Length: 423
Image (tube, rainbow, N blue to C red; front, side, top):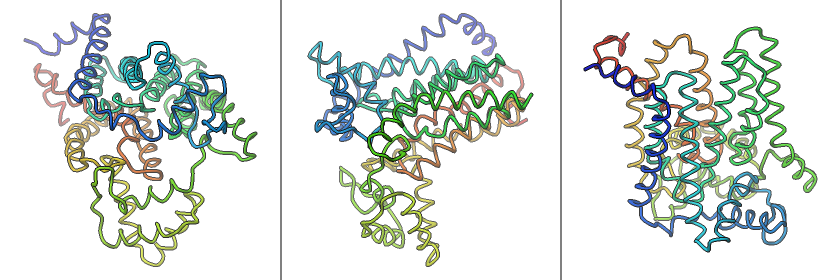
């Protein structure tokens, strides 16, 4: 029996593909919630209670994006509270608990984003690789973990995948339809400010992804940037009018800065504590004693002085933050177990990357673009707070390379291209 031909025959019927994705995504998410249990004490993050929910409720009341004191919320951009107005409106109508309606919205939003993720990967590679990628992504435990609570990553993924899909559709169709992808990526950034430079990355990458004529691609790249700017401009303008300052999407409070770099000083919510070398712990203690850091730039300046005096602890701190981005949590729960699970996935991602560079040379710029998005998120996570949650959205892109491994295994099992795994 030819496995490859059997799979291709099934994939010819696209309505079955979408039906299967929808059913599988719903089933996996529902099972995950049932197995997880209520988990109520961990279901409502403090940011939701103190900022997101009051902001969303005041929008519903017609007061605008303000806190309960009537002040504009500057520390969190308005995208996620705007999304929350939908489940909270349903909560007000039905009398259900807010966490229940949010979970329901999370489930269906995740189904939609999963379908768009499939379309994106299919556009970039092929249907088989897209299906393998989608299955890995929909069953990824740290993606599923997000659906249990008010997680801004859930709607962010919908706009993130949607913007990239429309961006590559415009590239493949060779037209000027770049305004909408820019707007959608801008909306994603209003939900999670980590996307601040997505529009710029897409603009710069366009002449490489569609190399000729260069002037036309530069023009089209500028359209992406215009769309991105149009999405975030009203919020930026409102903050400027209220504060007289130009603030990139959200105001970072000084009390947020030190914990991002001196994370090991205080134990997590469950008493867990990161294992840190003594010299790095001493550096963190010195950092924590400083009360005058008004920005991350001030922290970097201080670390540069520390580096001049003794570079070793600073280098170690940087390497620890770089590594922790792939497995750490805010509360430091079960980080060793998370690391093991992550390594299991990387067993397929790394060889998939090698295979991709060898087998898909005509798509080399696309592969590099996907990796640049991953590297960008990685860098932003290290600068901010090195936790896995911030990396989850772009780990989806890495699963494309896992899928390439499985696609090659199918070819190998079918007796075709038996050397494709090593050629």
